[in-house]
Length: 322
Image (tube, rainbow, N blue to C red; front, side, top):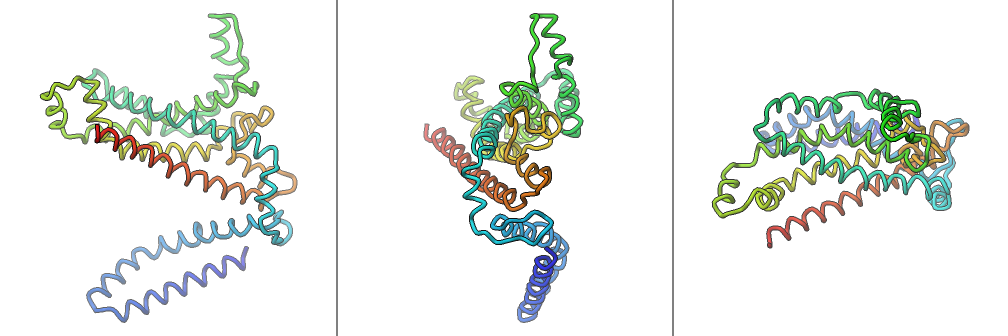
């Protein structure tokens, strides 16, 4: 690792020197602007190169090695990726659980946050209070929220106390493989709609009132205005909200770590949690295998982002053509 970092630092210094040399051969005014820009960017570029670019490159290298933190990495080619295809935990639990989580959480939190934002954009009494109340979970630590819900959904928690008093039933929310993942999904939806609501609310307030007035003059009702005016104008914001929500769901870790630790029976083990489990929780760290999972996860996020962008843009094109 030290050798790899040394090579990275040297490469960064070489690039910086070459950039300065190239600047010296440019016209004076252009050169001064160019140098000024890079002087301001240099701290960020150095930090990004050291802690992001080099780290990602080193993790990519580790995904082709066998490495346990106690001995030097051993190059084994694509064997880590091939072994993942036959690993039961990865194939039967991590990937399905991650996809279920994304498919269940992203549309739900997007729709709820849009509806809440639209409601709080109306002239309601105490709307500032409600905006603050909905946003509070977003500024609260996810670990704290997870601990609160861990208490709420415990077998002797307040949720089961209410169910027992009303219906005479008790649900094993976090200890049943069928209910553990949906329970964590509820926690995530509740804790993230505040941020999504705030983004939608800002976008709604930025829509020109002339568009609504023109639609009303043309005879459109409130539902048609929302369908053919609000949604198309919000399409870039919807894409942004869906993208950040999807990336967050693919990388879900803290709620699972605090509430179930991947259990019961790996029913809540996701790809992000599996990376941690193999890299740091195992008695013999599997850094190479964990790095391979990380890059497969990155490819899945990239593919899902491209797919949802095409879906949103395609829906927008259909609306404009209607």
